[in-house]
Amino acid sequence: MVNPNHKVSVGIIFGGVSGEHEISLLSARSILAALNPQKYEIIQIYITQEGTWLSGEDMLTKVSQGHLKDSIPVALFADPTRPGVYRLTSFENAGKIDLLKEVDVIFPVLHGTFGEDGTVQGLFEMAGLAYVGAGVVASAVGMDKGIFKDVMRANGLPVVESRIFTRQEIIDHLDKVIENAEEVAPYPLFVKPANLGSSVGVSKCFNRSDLEKGLMDSARYDRRILVERGVEARELEVSVLGNEAPMVSLPGEIIPADEFYSYNAKYHDDRSQLLIPAPLDDDQTETARNLAIQCFKAVDGAGMARVDLLMDRNNGVIYINEINTIPGFTQISMYPKLWEISGISYSELVDRLIDLALERKAERQKTIYCYQREKSTR
Ligand SMILES: Nc1ncnc2c1ncn2[C@@H]1O[C@H](COP(=O)(O)OP(=O)(O)O)[C@@H](O)[C@H]1O
Ligand SMILES: [Mg+2]
Image (cartoon, rainbow, N blue to C red):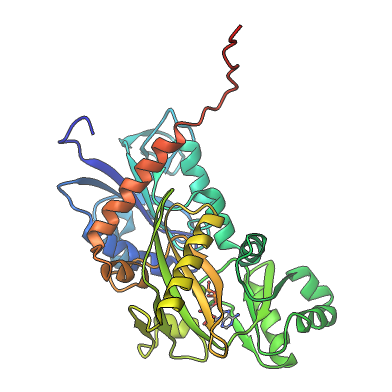
């Protein structure tokens, strides 16, 4: 950096129009506490559940106390000649804007819809901003569990048998959908919305009546519903960090307090446990780590991701279940915990992610966006 006294200005965005809004606030709290104020100038941006962008000091306290009136409505522009966070000074009638602060890098701490699915990443790309984590394609592929599995299969990576049904098919031809779903694999089957997280709308079905209920329930949450083979599984998770040459952590293991790792088991039942690292033999550990890295590369991941695996208890086969491109990021979340045992502290991890975002932007700037005729040698 030219000026050693220049603080890197980081726009940290949290909240969002997502079922995982609250989880985002928890992740953001930990990240904000870890950002070194000597090194970074921080702009906090909170996106309300309705999608309004607000900025100010200590936004998390304002959110928890319901004091959002004291905050400033802000916006980012897709126009790269106007880099930075803009203040809307007369928000009611969208009257005036002015530059609040230029930003060097955005840290989206937005789990789920509009944050982890490539949509907000598209805005950052258009704005020419450096940002932490995966780009548009990796985010979108990681979000849609159906497309994700197709991409894994195309790369020869192991995933369980599955099939996508649409809400319309479920509503119009439930009997046919059930018949086709039962061809995927023997019970138990898992039914899940293709584009959600936190186990919302996920059900384990032991028979036709469960399946029917599961399909109807899932179809409330998404247009695309995945039915897949249920595995009697150990649940392993691996952290990936990097861009072109990513590093991969040791695997961790989840011991869910429920029949499976349901919403309740994830966030409310404190009997769920994380084993860090997972008790595995060397071969299993290496297989898990290899799958994680191959998965990351197959979706063109960047910055970070947590790759979740299912290991069949009966034969030890390991399947890739999903990739999370903005994994849970509290001090006690699996993603940072797995790095901690590899000697990367939470705050060092945040530093590295910001450096990786800047590195990726520099890489992107090598691409030209207009046709240049090759110089004639004649
Ligand atoms: N095919 C499967 N076999 C066994 N358990 C599964 C399967 N799919 C999902 N699960 C269970 O459901 C949980 C949530 O499903 P997952 O696909 O991870 O969706 P989410 O994005 O909501 O976390 C998993 O953590 C696991 O406990
Ligand atoms: Mg999951």
